[in-house]
Image (cartoon, rainbow, N blue to C red; front, side, top):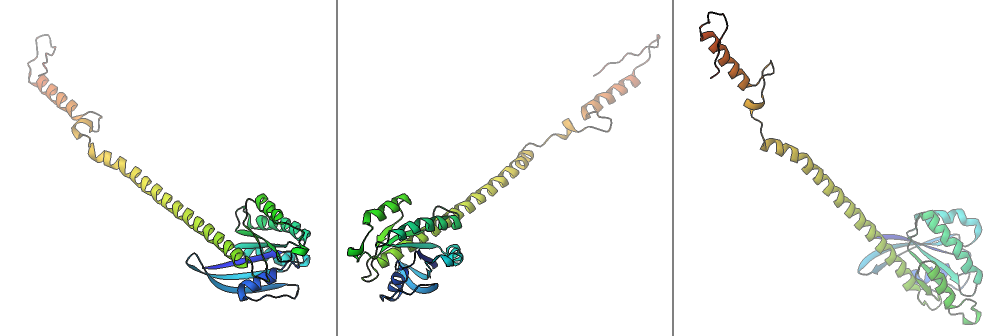
Length: 248
């Protein structure tokens, strides 16, 4: 399966560093502002082969239009801030809202990453700060990472891939359930259409009882009339000229 993962965050938080460390196992120390870099990596998650396309996005404001295109095409997101920069965490709040708005869903595979955890002397954000944001976001998975020492780098990427896999499995199961329900409804409609036909076949109507001739009389009425006419013809007339009839 091929999955597209997008790495988002403010400039200088180490998005490129953790991406290159994950893909190539190399630490990039120098900072070169990114416009867009794309990486590919094949990994195995829970026994399934996954082909990842990782988009390392720009952190500067002038590339917001490009960022929207990345978000539309992405299936999972790493939202990265630096534990040495309080504003970088605040910027993630707006980035997350942008992701949810563009994806038009509250259920988006996502991981919160606090990078540069090895710089303890420069730290201004505690682990508890990251945990609180994670809880505010509905218990989004949270990792503190170090691109230099590869701390929790693989774990963060694998976590978001697992979320993507679970979401796609849930969507597939829902579609299968809907198809099964539609099939059952079609079968029920066919049964409903067949039942009246079976009832008509099992209860035939007698032609002698319900068939009527052109004049609207039944066969029994015709027999009575025929016998009545015959008896009036055969009986002798009385002297008074009246007729005497007997219905046998």
